[in-house]
Image (cartoon, rainbow, N blue to C red):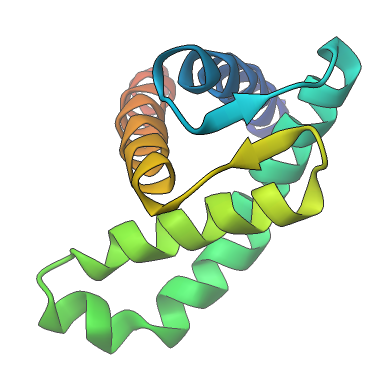
Length: 119
């Protein structure tokens, strides 16, 4: 049950961050409704749960060589995949992608710490 609760928290937080990024980052645009937002958040959570660990395993040497900076590119790639999979999300350029990646990373780091401390 704890696992399912963490997934639900991550989905809700990702939905909120999508809205916040569309509000504060120029070039990051959300044009969908609430249901589409929840679907996008579920897709993003699935990408982070299944595809991101595979990418980290595959690109592990690059992450080590760049002292972790390559992990930002992996996070950007997951957000780019979300952009391509969901029609209401429009990321117009590399700078909005990078800024949104940093925003998602910081928020999800705090959420991860918060859910981990609840054990």
